[in-house]
Image (cartoon, rainbow, N blue to C red; front, side):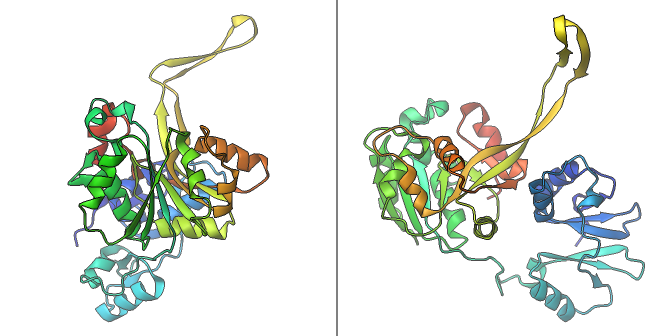
Length: 353
């Protein structure tokens, strides 16, 4: 294949820039090279995620994160050898290098296994709860006609797109928490022939972003996912699940790295109002909640019945009790929020169907 420039990055580029480029190229890998494309290392989103979880700065150069001994094939290797490299190492891409370690081409999993042979998608056995009871007032006037879960993205409603993505990873048991325009949501799914099981949970009065989870006590026995019905997270759900289990978290928050620029000069003052300095258009990076979580079933006992209770209340309660709360970072463009009218059309452009 022709070498895509978005797959390559120089070693002095910041981790922040590299993560943005990694998110844009869609290939889950960056190759770190010198100016003549001699291979120095490789970087995946997992490498950057582990760096962030160590509370390290994303302004450091990518050379601090890269793997200096990436798996490569030689330009003299046969397709059989390359196939074995992909299978044995469970990787999506193998760079092919010449005798000077210059990258001459890239071989992707799909180039070898075009018919889905030896599918590397890990399957998980976990229920998913979709929180679909809100009124979606930020999407007025659309939600005066349709409930928010049925707002279309592409050729299907947002809730079905969410469920299809989880089903791709093996999840086939779905709980949908409903309230506003609940009969329309039920009617939509009754007319669909689906490969998965759905159970509706009706909250009689709105009970916040987590209150309706109390209705699932006794119904869910194992680790489960929760998602809002107006967000799409383009991530490996099997890896999120594995991370949650390995870290022994009680709840894992999937968070997106968001970049903010204040479009003004910011003034820093000291005692008595004296000027200390001015920072022109300062930039900040923050991890923000995406609306996707992994929970252990015993947490359902912490949620009160028949009262307004938000997911932030649950997180704070878990933290106060000394239980482990984990964070799984994803890139900026990996998270699409369609819950606000001003951002709806723009958000659709970034969705990778």
